[in-house]
Image (cartoon, rainbow, N blue to C red; front, top):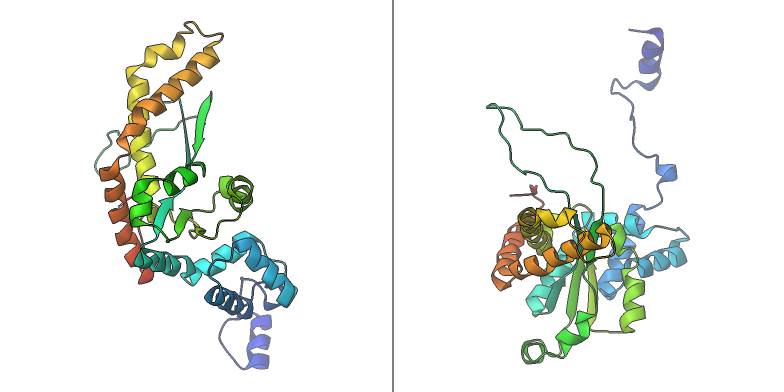
Length: 279
């Protein structure tokens, strides 16, 4: 035992090790008091956005918090999941919102390896043209004007469930720009790293598998410029054709199956049990 350790034990009179690591209380911005206050804000008005919560915290406590920090703190309290269950119980119209992308790169997703070992293939980062799609709010008015919506969801809210991906940072702002003020449209953000709670993730997986199959069947078009002005234009057209041909796989049966699959993960989350992605 070193002399410094012996001196510390005699001075403190406690053999337990001192606290190491972690944030010091003097530098913690989002304290338990602020978290409880945010819970109170949501109890009084559940329609508040992350930006509005940040403004309320700034006004009451003089602390500037980012929307990502607020989302992470509320996720630990299961605020999002409880609100989601409440919307389901009220029979609101729930829309799952996300983005995806794909490119011309195709490879086998399965391989062979010795028992007890993984089949690992090192690949370079994808290059070339990428086609990106982002679900949009333009369908909102079309859904609201449909006969099915008026018959079954008239007078109820439209709840849009989305994650905290960088592509969604300006969703609230863009929503106001596109549609103006709509009291019946609610944005509900999921906690970080929770794709197992969003059925659209599974739908996109099936969609992208169909896209890869389409590209494999039409691989000769990747190298044929045809009547297009450039090979790049020809390849972008191929990616669009792949999307138009594969989008039909996302039907009512697939969406229902993925929604039921996510309900099991939702039940585990409400019980504070671990959830394994991909099961």
